[in-house]
Amino acid sequence: MAIPQSFIQELLARADVVEIVGRYVQLKKGGANFMGLCPFHAEKSPSFTVSPTKQFYHCFGCGKHGDSINFLMEHTGMSFIEAVKELAQHYGLQVPEDEASPQDRARAAEQRQKQATLNDVLDKAGEAYRKHLKSAPRAIDYLKRRGLSGEIAKQFGLGYAPEGWRSLASVFPQYDDPLLVESGLVITNAEENNSGEEKRYDRFRDRIMFPIRNVKGECIGFGGRVLGDEKPKYLNSPETPVFSKGRELYGLFEARNAIRDLGYALVTEGYMDVVALAQLGFPNAVATLGTACTTEHVQKLFRFTDTVVFSFDGDAAGRRAARKALDGALPYATDVRSVKFLFLPAEHDPDSYIREFGKEAFARCVSEAVPLSRFLIEAAREGCDLSSAEGRAHLASNAKPLWSQLPDGALKRQLLTEIAELVQLGSQELSELWNPPARSSERERPPANRSENNSTWRNDGEGYSSKFSKKWAPRPPRVRAQLVNRADHAARLLLAHSGIWDSLSSEDHHLLCELPEPHGPLLSWLESQLHEHGPQPWAALREGLREHPAEALAVKLMTGSDLAAGDDHGETMAELRNLLNRMLIDHLKAQETEAIEASLNNPAALERYRELQTRRRALETASPQKSD
Image 1 (spheres, rainbow, N blue to C red):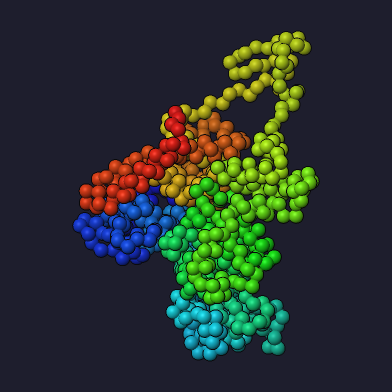
Image 2 (image 1 turned 60 degrees about the horizontal axis):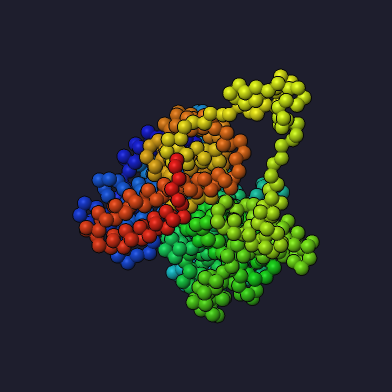
């Protein structure tokens, strides 16, 4: 979905950044601006300012800044499209869908209405479950035995589904409403009862109920746990128009601020782990919903933090779960992100471990968790006898698909060296073994001696040709659009290889989307496309850009470009990384100037200036100046 830039500008002109930020941050008037504690990092004295005249927020402590849309994306984890829709709905504006047919717009409106209605149905059920908990001694006793307080139960909205088969009939008088089935609250059975009616009954019965919320806080489903040892122990809502297990994480709405404050997300295996950890001092925990960790889960977490720690039991099942989490994390394990794996003793879960050994002991376990690099090698060498050539070859075979998923960078290159040492090969040898150099057929190149076979060769300015065989003639060189600056170069690389976007850090994303027009709007649009549709080839992106204000720039950059025809991913990523480092250096220089000016009124800004200067110098050392 391409949203016209004119609508974005109208929306930002209508929105009041003070009002939007004020929903989440307690602001106080301070001169011309408003001040508050930054929601993106832990601080005791306010360095977060919101300007009503510039319609901009800025934190002198962590450097986060932007407009109303940026704030919703950064604070709630929404995608660009989601943030625009949220803001538009708040101000009573309709997001234009000019490229959609009337039928498509009607279907989209119907789908939005259906989702809103299902959320309302689920909210109503959740309220009923919470009321039932107050009069359910068995359920209350179970929660107390698990060490949970009434306060934490209220924070997570815990409830109880009674034992009856049709308890929800008292909540929804129209028990035959199809929405109850579509929301996953009621099950229908094709077998008819004695009265000739289709059987209907509540999905959740005699269970502690855990409402599952999306990042906006809307109820999208439930998880139910039995009070005893019955099977299944946990029962989840089915897939619905508002709920997908492969994309959602339990507790993310409740944990999102703590994840930012503590600097990492702790991924556990169950609902009870999340709730118990929140009470025991680890409110940054989330859990997958009865399914393996997916790349979409990892991608969603990296919207809130650059560090993720997976916590699993140390038994065989925990190892298998960790192995699946490794697969989900590899594509996003860039050099600026950290992924770790924590394995507790088989007889403990996080709750029991903390209660027996204390909060500090568990925090130490988190800090000493196994880094992704070490776990990757452990997974690859499992079952391999490294004392034999066969075992080492087996390790190389196991490691290749794992290593290949990593985005290019220092981590990937270091792991290549480590794996090469284990299999007793040189790094270059292993690289060539995994990625054999392409070899041209003897028939598809011109003879070494142009006079052989009595062929007559000529140079016509576009490559050599032969009067006997045109297939030997090299392809005429394509004319690439002239690159004027780094922004041109970075935009073209990303349009040709859009999948690289998810390998970049949130700082990179912000830097690119904040570029001046037309590059910033173009890359903001690209980000929205990736959130909605995933990586796409240039041909698909070209169609989506029709009538976009940045269409002319994109077409100019990609005219005659053969980047999308198969450039080496590693080289492309390295080229983009160098460009971004140079752009970031320029950005840091500008921030240094701002910090110096701000220090006249805020002495704390001097410390910010020193941090910026130190980082800039480190980048300059690592990224020698190159001509663009």
